[in-house]
Length: 78
Image (cartoon, rainbow, N blue to C red; front, side, top):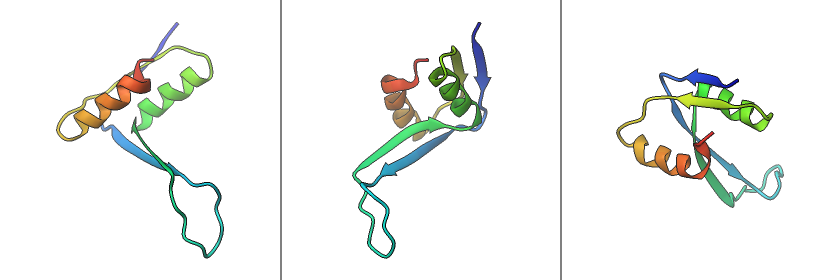
């Protein structure tokens, strides 16, 4: 059985990592990740991480098409 999610208003989630979080000092990010996001996309991602099967369906276009396609090439073919 497979779960299919529909996200009508997807987003590009941007996250970064830092070696450690300390008060007062400036945080310098080392790696920045851009991934397709939004309710259904995130749900499908978690289902797959938990061992299930999922398909995320969402419209892409404009400036987001390129970054979403790059993300998909990496990890979005669930």
